Length: 89
Image 1: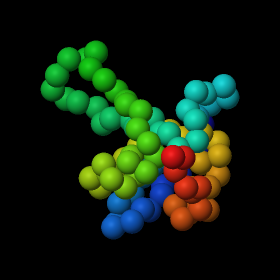
Image 2: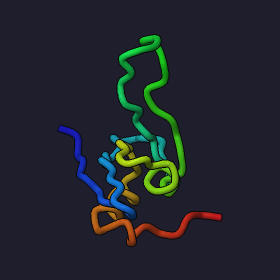
Image 3: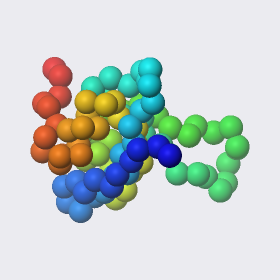
Image 4: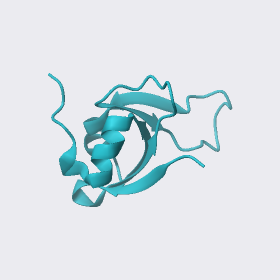
């Protein structure tokens, strides 16, 4: 069973956060945003996209997101969104 937890963000937004598997390619500060299934449209449409973690959780989050993060960000988010390190410049 994959590890995951619900995170409550600013302004009442939520996210379901998942830990990437061993050997994953997601770096700190990045997130793989899982898109909801589309009932209309081609079956081969996109299922996810990469975004910065801040954008995925706060800026582009219209209410609820599902995302996969690296181990370091996962541990920080388990303690709360305020524990995330600053974004790299």
